[in-house]
Image 1: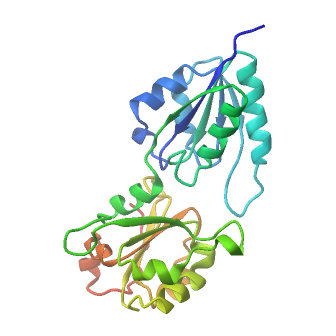
Image 2: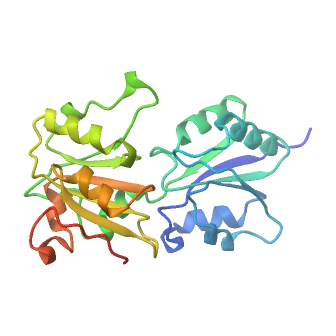
Length: 257
C-alpha cells in the first residue's frame, strides 16, 4: 500500500503576499496539490513548484461556494494517494476559517495534518488604519465575532457584547449592519461610539470608513463599501490615522491607500 501523504492548512493572510510567514512559504513550495480559497491572493502561488496542481475552491460569503464536504473529501483522496496537500485559506485557518472542522475530519481518517497560522484580516484591518485593538486607556481586550450565526440559535448576543466594554472586531457583518447596530444600542453602547469599516485590508484596493455607531448604517450605505470588510467598534478607533484629520466622528472617509 502506498504511504499516506499529508495535509497542511496554511493561513495565507489578509491579502498582501508579503504578509505570508516563512513557514507558509516553505509549505507552499513543498506542495504537490494546492487548494486555494477565493479570498487568497493568487500571487502567493509564485512560491509553488512548477509542477504543482492548483485547485480553486472558492469560499466567499454570500456567493456560490464549493461545498465544504467536497473540499474535505478531495484533500483526503489526494493525501491517501501519497501527496502533500496544502489548503490555502484566507487569513488564519482557525479564525472563521473552518480549519478546526477540516483538521478533525482528516485526522479521523488517519491523515496527518499540520496547521500554519496566518495574519487574520481582523488584525490587519485595524492595523492598516492605525488602530490598536487594545489600549490601556480605552480597552483591555478585544472580541472577534462573526456578523451572523449559522442559524438564529447561534446569532451573536450583541447586547451582551456591548456590555463587555471591549473592542469588537466583526467579520462578515456588512450585510447585517443595521441589526448589529440595533443590538449594540439595545445593550447600552453609546451612539457616539467610534466605528471603522475596512474593505480589502492590506491590498492596494483597500478603502475605509470612519463613523459612529449611530450613523454607521447610513454612512456605510453612502460609502459603497462592501465585502470583504472588517468592522471595528470601540473607543480605540479614535486612534485611526484619519480621525483627527477629519475633525469629527461621522465623517465619511473612504479613500485608497
